[in-house]
Length: 211
Image (tube, rainbow, N blue to C red; front, side, top):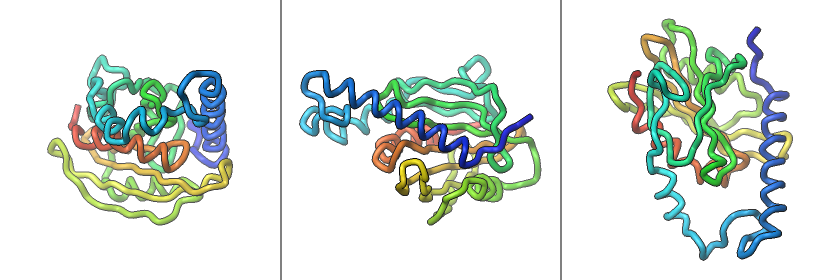
């Protein structure tokens, strides 16, 4: 029986991410030349260099035989690891199908791909329903885009995390295909992590095409 995504699941996910960060901080404190946050010092690597690495393609997902078989395919950033999700988890009209983990690339967060059944709903309707199913959302900004012959809708919004007691940015985009709608969502531990992962999210959106 599918489980609906809600505050309980989100708190568990955030708790796991927070635990990863705290572990990283502890390890960094014991190493040489690392800051207390577990990140390289400002002089070690510039933001531009991180972005350049993030947008390098490390492969793709969606096609038959890939880590996640989906109605669409897109490029994944170098070092990000994709894994199909077996346990059904629903948010609005779509079900979680794939998680692409940023930790191997040095960030805390995921690109999550959600897929639904074929129907008459357009991408905007699907995306609005997806966002509306997440508690604590505000400041939604929707806009249209095209990629790979597909017309889609993207959104940026704020999510109020009860666990972290702060508000952070999140992003998502949606398209519809003959095999059903697809939503790709980028969260992150906090706004800083989210913004560092945005180049990987944009790489996925730019290279989007039907499988």
